[in-house]
Length: 412
Ligand code: RNT
Ligand code: ZN
Image 1: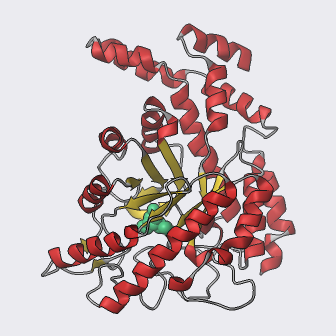
Image 2 (image 1 turned 90 degrees about the vertical axis):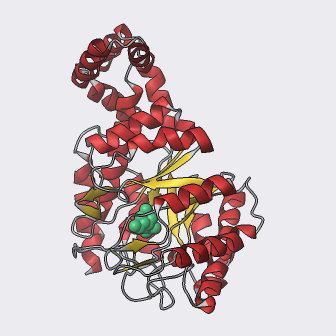
């Protein structure tokens, strides 16, 4: 079907495809730099810790800032729209060769990233890195050792200042997300103590009077990690309460809940109390495995909630790291899938569906929900891509394979 025909079919439902395309063009998704190098960063810190794991050894991983930036460029060139990049503190660039520890990081260590983003008109989001470090041995902000807590509190404050710098330099607020891996492998005897310490540490970090014009802090909960199966200090309840009391935003990582929970159902409840909700869209396979997101029911359900509650009320970032496949393709596929999910949701007659629910016309609602699955959203997607001068189908992969031959293969 052509776009014009699809447009007509949607118009019968009361859906304006032009409006859907325009809305989607304005949605910026934050693309996580860490898919490009398996969450390694530039510190030569050693192995990835914190209960997260990359598996696979696909050749061509980025080893330097230049390589990572080139790979990001390649990926972004195949994704329609204007997006953002999401950095971690461990991606600091020590231009003069003088390394500093994480508690001493400064905006100048991210100057090159700002330069990169400015040239391309991208926004930057940020994350302090509370893992893959000698002082991140199981517990960080909730450690029983005051020196360890102090180090990580300093890191948190240093990162808030860096986030302000990004926001100020780039003219778009930087979402800075706090996630700590703190937890215990086996049944704790004291669940309260570490949570109390985590709260007190955050209180100290957020005492720093960051400028809300430049940065927006979000806090991310988790269920469990590898090696920390029995107790996670920063649980969902912990962060929900902390966010509400301290006027912060919750970040929902779609891999951080029981596998049978619907993360999409949590969105409206949070939104009602905080006005905005942030996301790490990921794909858990049996556990928080961080597979590349597919266009699956979980993602489309989240996209529906995002669209139905106003895309402007959401901070959408991706968070997965698959080292077993081409990393550039992993970015492109995930970003495009997120966009497709949003487009599908934008093409639903949401007012009609809502009216059916309120009128208790559940049969009609069910029928329409199901029949919508057969509507030609792909033709609208094709139009959206063609306006961005990009292929709507898998042809983009040819570009990635060429890049693999010409650039990635040389990396050994
Ligand atoms: C870990 C969290 C966290 C990290 C990134 C690298 O389970 O999801 O967000 O994945 O910060
Ligand atoms: Zn996450």
